[in-house]
Amino acid sequence: MTFVQGRRVGRLATVGEGGIPSVVPICYAVIHYDGEPVVVSALDEKPKHVPLRDLARVRNILRRPKVSMVVDDYHEDWRALTFTRLSGKAEIIEPDHGLHAVGITALRAKYPQYERMAINAAPLIAIRQLRATSWHGGKTGPSPVEPFAQPGATELAALVRGRRSVRSFQSRSVPRNIIEQAIAAAGWAPSPHGRQPWRFAVIEAPERRASLAAAMAESWQTQLELDGQTPEIVRVRLDKSRQRLRDAPILIVPCLYLAELDHYPDPARQEAERIMAIQSLGAAIQNLLLSIHAAGLDAGWMCAPLFCPELVRDELGLEAALIPHALIPVGYAAKDPARRGRLPLASLIVNWE
Image 1 (cartoon, rainbow, N blue to C red):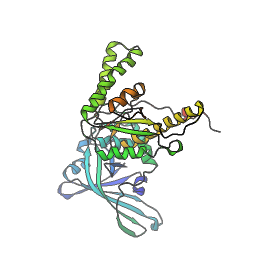
Image 2 (image 1 turned 60 degrees about the vertical axis):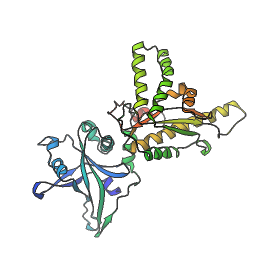
Image 3 (image 1 turned 120 degrees about the vertical axis):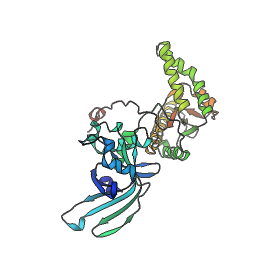
Image 4 (image 1 turned 90 degrees about the vertical axis):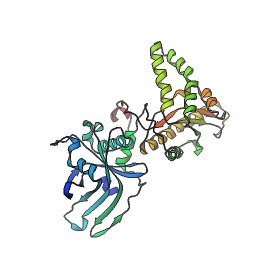
């Protein structure tokens, strides 16, 4: 899929009424979703003669979802001619589908023009169950599409930029294997002496999530009141925080685990050891979040346990050596969150010699 990922334009072929073929050039991106590669293409704001849902490609896909797409390179030296034909099953993905957000992020990372278009408000085309045939210099043959191909630079940029902090989740359940894969990814984060000073608790049962939210409510209220918030604001924010824990299908609790770190006789080095472990936990959480996003889900990062680690530990029945540091609600986003801007690169680099 490396060749396909690197090209800018594909030719999408659909079949219309009476078996008449329809071919149109499209912008596209390749993502991984639910363990398989998926080609996505936006129904964008480039000039069109009909509404988006009346486009021939949309009507044809709704009637006959089997499609093909050709991506090619032309070269005057015909020995260097190359093309790949992808065949698969297409569908129209609405904005409330989990795949939609992943696809929009990848498309915007690949095509800067899409940053100025409201493609997130329109459906997109997704092609799954991909089968590839390639031709190069006269050599042909079927090319199985690797479900876990190494992401290229474009995919990595889309993954990093696409990760978002979601506060509202659908009730849809989350596959256990996605959570296990995310925690396994966290395990590859750098850590002091390679000791991996962190562990993860997973809370799925609704009654356990509700119980934790209730137990933490008093601590949350105290923190909000210390911030000088009005009683009404305290009530609203408290209700929202509790709802996040109750509504998210999965809660992951990253915990600091210092028991196996090195011990030093002087306080300064021991404190440095502890700080290194905390830094490492942050890297593990980032791996976790990116893995969740790559699987087509969303998550948030709540730091509330920092203010009441003993309470969270006791409520979950964790051993004394574990120090809860965060709550990561995981699920399928119920709505797109408002995203904050980011500093320009020039503001991030303070010295380069």
